[in-house]
Length: 178
Image (cartoon, rainbow, N blue to C red; front, side):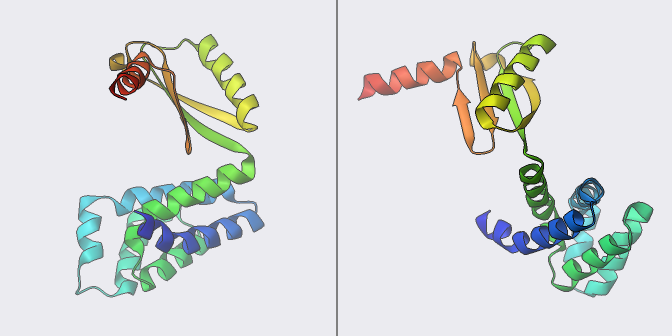
């Protein structure tokens, strides 16, 4: 996984710097998201691995599938990525681009998994507290998992806060084994 990220980083950084310089972060985010989704399609995967096709053929087919969703600069980007045989890295490139974009915008996506559904008031309060703690705008994504028994697990990038009953029981079991 780290190797793929290492290979994808220069492309994501180049795309980000171009998008930032031209105030097109949202457009490039959408284009790279589409490119990542298209590259993961089974039929496209087979095409990208076909040894009989040149990189120009792969890029042209890829751009044709995406239709008019790509502007000229994005099409050039796809051609460069294809020339270097890196089209399979588009999901990683898109993911890294989104991280650069979130850093620029001082925002963060936070996944909250709770034992029970959180109402809007609870989500707003949690987002406000997390925003103050992280010093960024928080985009909250809530999910339910009854296996937690109670409490929540919060994931924001590398930060994981496990306030679930299941997590507390696991800590207690570990302490008793010591």
